[in-house]
Length: 199
Length: 79
Image (tube, one colour):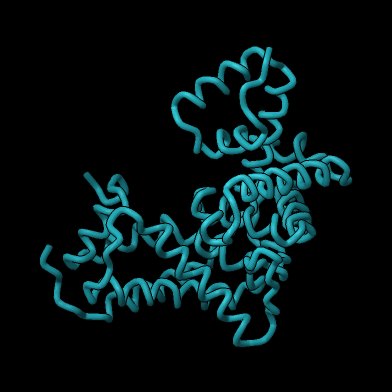
């Protein structure tokens, strides 16, 4: 069995035993999701790449020092590191004013997206850019749940705990986020459903 | 058909967080309700579109991570 067929836990086990290639598979498997999660918060390509590297460096140090103890849960663990670093970055730089909702949860308030420069198809690029723009217009609480559920892969239960709301509230926010995005896409000039999947 | 689940349950279903019994009920309802099926299809389409927003870091960033890992020369751990 080659490295690409192994699950995260098996790859970590090999990495702990000195197999650097196993870690490379993990990095390549998850770097896009980790990078996107950071990028959606900091909205700067270079800052996002720096923070992604910092995230992995923290992970490497933890794993190689023997402190890692979340077998089988590598992605949620490293996404938490990434998310915390991204939030800390803006707090330190005072460019990310923290907004706390009535229920005490911190919401994202600074989401915009740079254009991707390496998309192959113009239609997809336009659609992605449009969607990124529409996400940025969502109410903060909806944006927060959308990032946590869709890009960080947290369960609704985990989101509810992290943001100190009920599961139904988290679900409701996600539902409204999706409904709002769909409405905005439908009313925008670009018909996303007819163009986006055209090859 | 009487709907036995909420809109929030449909969101949980789309994100694969419903249990086996809930999934069975929702699947049955989808077969029997064209409006619900259309709603489900729209949400799934949007979900896929959201995946398209994902972006990749430059390869140089990946290379630097791997260089750091190789440079951190700790003895292999015993499991």
